[in-house]
Image (cartoon, rainbow over all chains, first blue to last red; front, side):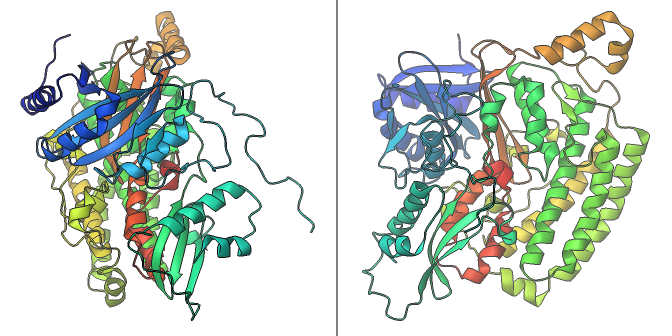
Amino acid sequence: MSLKLTEPLQRTVDSLTENFTDKIIEVYQSSGDTFIRIETGSLKEICTHLKNELHYVYLSDIFGIDRYTSDERFEVVYNLLSLRDRTRIFLKVRCEEENPELDSVTEIWPAASWNEREVYDMFGVRFNNHPDLRRIFLPEDFEYFPLRKEFPLLGIPGSIELPGTTPNTD
Amino acid sequence: MKLTDIQSKVHSTFFKEHQKKLYQSLEDKHTTIEELDDGDPLTTKMILNMGPQHPATHGVLRLVLQLDGETIEKNKLDIGYLHRGVEKIAENKTYQEFMPYTDRMDYLSPYSNNVALCTAVEKIASVEVPERAHYIRMIGCELARISSHLLWLGTMVMDAGAISFFIWTFKEREKIYDVMDRIGGHRFTISHARIGGVANDLTDEATASIKEFVNTFPNELRDYHKLLDRNRIFIDRNEAVGVLETGNALAIGATGPVLRACGFALDIRKLFPYARYNEVEFDIPTRLEGDNLARYYVRMEEMSESIRIIKQCLEKLPKGHIRTDNAKLAYPSKDEVYYSMEGMIHDFMMTDTGICPPDGAECYHAIESPKGELGYYIQSDGTGHPWRLKINAPSFTNLQVLENMLDGEMVADTVVIIGGIDPVLGEADK
C-alpha cells in the first residue's frame, strides 16, 4: 500500500528510517492515521529521538491491544502529538504472551506514568523502571487482567471481595 | 511517617494488599529529595484520607495526603471506584449499541461523548455525514460545553465558599436541559447523535428555544462576571493556588482548559478541525498564570465563545438530510421503516449487525470535549463489534496533573484545586 503522507509526516518517517533503519518494522496508514511499528528493544531510543529531534513533545495516550495470536500477543500503542508540525503519529511495539515486559517511557514523557499503569492493569504488561507500577482501576488484590480476550464479560465470581449483604452487628 | 506506623493504626477490612501498596507508594514518593525524617517530635505530621465519599471531591475520588501541619507534603490519588469496564463492554456491543454507554462516561456533557464516538466510527467506516447534521452536532456540543462549564462554575464557587451561586448556575443548566429535551427528547443522557448523522431534525420549537437561550445567556454570564471578577474572597481563594508551571504542563500531559490556562492554545477544534469548526469563527481563550483563577477566566471566556459558535451555526444551518441516505451505513428514517418492507429489513439489519468497518482497519479520532481532548481509538476485525475500543479520557489525564500539582499546597485549598481541574470520575474510571 502506498503511503499518502503530508510533508511534516514524511520528514518524521524519513528521519526515523535514516537513523533507525533496521529498527523500523513497518510504516502504514489506516483511515488517515499513520502507524509506525518498531522493534521492542529500541523503544526508548526512538522515543528520545522523536521527542528531542522531531518535536513530539506531547504524549496523548498509551494503550494496549490484545491481538490474541500465539506469537507477539500484546501490542502497546503510543499516541504522540507534535504541536509544531500539527501531526499525530502512533508508535507500536509488540511483546510476547509469556511475561510481557517493556521499557517505561516515564523519563521521556512524565505523562506516561498513569497510562502505563492502565496498560499494566488491563493487560498485565509490565514496564521496567516505572516509578510506581501499581494497578490503577482495580485493587491490587485482584489477580486477573480484564481486557485480555480470555477474561469473561461477566467477570469471575468471587474474584473481588465485596461487603456482606447483612449488617455487621459487632 | 513510616508504613509500619500507618499499618498499626489502619485496620482495613477490604483489599488489604491494595491499601498496603497505596500507603507504600505514598511513602516512596520523593524519597530521593526528602531529608531524613527527624522523628517528628511535635507530631505535626499526619496522613489524611479524603474521599472517596467526600462531597467536595466531585465524585468518588480518593486522595491520600501526607500533611505537615496544614501543608501537603506529598499525596497519592486512588481512582477506580467507578470502574465499570466500558472498554470491555464495547467489545461485545455493536457501535450504535455502545453509544448510550458513552453518555454515562462524562455525564456532564453527554452530547460531546456521543459525537466523539460517532465521528470515530464514521472515520473508520468512511461514512459521509450531511452538512445539516454537522451543524446540529456542533450546536449540541457547544450547549453541552456550556452546561458542563456551568456545573464546574457553580461547584467551584461553592467550594470557595459561596453557596447561593450554585443555584444560579443550575437555573441556567435547567434551561439547557429543557433545550436538550426539545432537541432529542431527553434531558440528561440525550444520545441524540447517530452514526451517519443525528436521530431527528431540529423542530421549530427546538430552534426557538436555542435562540432564546443564546439571547438571554450572555446577560447571565455578564452577571457572573460582575459578581466574581472583582470579588475579594473569590480572588484570594483562587489566585496563585494550584499553579501549574508552563514548562511542566505539556510534559505531564495536561489537556483542555487546564493546559490553556498555562499559555498553550491547544484546542482540537483548531488543530484538527472536525465537523464544520473550520467554517465558524471563534477564538481560543488562553492565560499565562496557570493558577486556578486563570482556569476560571479561560472557562468563562470559552462559554461566550460557545455562544458565538451557536449563533453562527444557527445562521448557517443548511437545509437537507440529517442522516446519510445509505441503508448499509446508517439507520433509515422512520418514515421508511414504517411504510416500506426494505426500510424495515434495513432497520433490523442495522440493529442486529450494525455497521461493519473493513477488517484490520484502525483509526483514532479526537474531539475537544469540555474537559479536553476526548479521543476514541477503534480497531476493527470486520464484524459489527470493535476488536478494541480505547477511550482517551481527558479527566483521567488531568487527574494525573492533579497528583503532581497538589504537593506543597495547603490542605484547605485541595477542594478548590480539585474544583479547578474539573474531573468527572465516570470518565476517568471508565
